[in-house]
Amino acid sequence: MHLPCRPADSNKSTFGSVLNIAGSVHFRGAAYLSTVSALRVGAGYATLAAIPPVIDAVAAKLSEAIFLPLPQDGATISRDAVFTLSSQIKSGTICSFGCGISALQNASVNLSETTDELLNIFIQKRTPLVLDADGLNLLAKSPISFRFGNRCVMTPHPMELARLLHTDVEQIQKNRLDAAREASKKYEAIVLLKGHRTVIALGEHGEINETGNSALAKAGSGDCLTGVIAGLLAQKMEPFDAAVLGAHIHGLAGEMASKDFSEYGVLASDLPSYIARIIRDLK
Ligand SMILES: NC(=O)C1=CN([C@@H]2O[C@H](COP(=O)(O)OP(=O)(O)OC[C@H]3O[C@@H](n4cnc5c(N)ncnc54)[C@H](OP(=O)(O)O)[C@@H]3O)[C@@H](O)[C@H]2O)[C@@H](O)CC1
Ligand SMILES: Nc1ncnc2c1ncn2[C@@H]1O[C@H](COP(=O)(O)OP(=O)(O)O)[C@@H](O)[C@H]1O
Image (cartoon, rainbow, N blue to C red; front, side, top):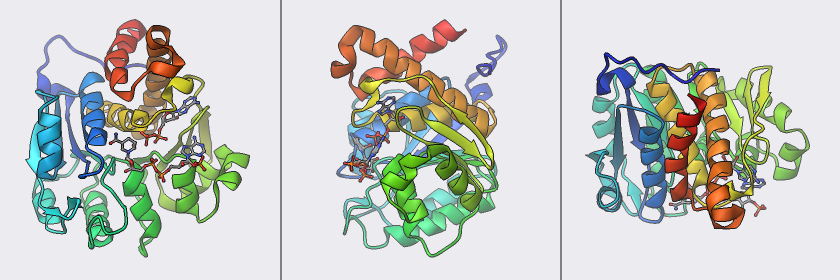
């Protein structure tokens, strides 16, 4: 599998744009890590759509991001955010949704309804989408049977997949590839089941990622993976290929980072710069 090409005669629009809907009062770092990772993997633009306190925190660390302030309800986005976002999401806009959006009880009374409306917009506008973390937890609770037409990469860890399939982590881990395949068929999506030996499924087709180590077993590293896959989608990779290559690059970044910091000491915020170094070496 090849990296997206990087023609000399190019500009930032050539490499696409990611609209990342992420973060809440409790989880501001998740918004930062997913946004910076999309830029580090080569996207031309990354826009973070978030509530003002999240934007303030991310703006202090990341000069390159563009910000779309969203209305706030409690600790997270309000239902009015749907109006703001629906005018921004055009046909084909690359979106990521869910990192740190916060499904904690009472984070926002209407977050489930807001999520259902957003998911409908993603489907109607046929947006390539990365759906992670609380985006998945809210989907699991939805009464609607969403089907994403294989334009969506869902990135659950085993507990998130257990919630989606209404089972437990033990069942998921017994046969990881079959569990990912089942969810892929249920949601018509690419399902990337995270963990040691991440698996990626599309219908019956499945791949196992061999890269990565325990340096990645630390809060925030999955948020980086979301940004990597979204950044590859922005560069026009097919969703399944973006998931496979994204997991490969993310795992190698963890391995390289652990050579400098040990598997104990790597932080998720170290990973984006190692993602760039891995891309240099893959080229
Ligand atoms: N800095 C920030 O802003 C950060 C923000 N974040 C945000 O936090 C929110 C909550 O997300 P979350 O994943 O921490 O909580 P949750 O869904 O309850 O799952 C936790 C349980 O899942 C399980 N589990 C996980 N991996 C597994 C594996 N490989 N294999 C097996 N089991 C596994 C494991 O269960 P256990 O092993 O304990 O039984 C674990 O206890 C979300 O919005 C996210 O974006 C985070 O990204 C962190 C950094
Ligand atoms: N022991 C491990 N070996 C390889 N990869 C791992 C290991 N532990 C975690 N990872 C990877 O790190 C990431 C963790 O994601 P996730 O559990 O969603 O964390 P978070 O929500 O805190 O960002 C996933 O890409 C997962 O595959």
